[in-house]
Length: 85
Image (cartoon, rainbow, N blue to C red):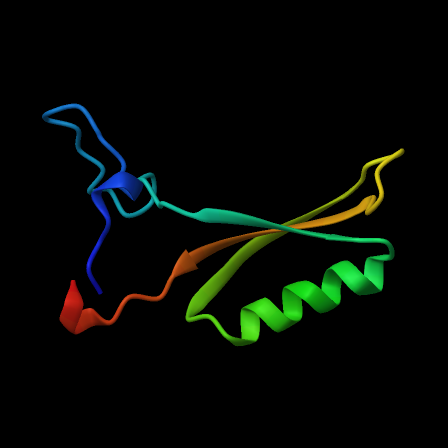
């Protein structure tokens, strides 16, 4: 996997995140909108089954006044091939 430098995190020189317990753990977020909760969960399910990611957390919101008020946010980490690291 080739990493796109536009999606990399810049950290100050000398920054140390080597402590496994308190280190930096980069994650990504993707939002799925739906008219119903079932629709938002269905969209998330379809997307996740096609990806090589590890689900870290989820959050749920209802955005009143929107066409698709049910919002499911998933937080995930990419599952990188150890040979590519």
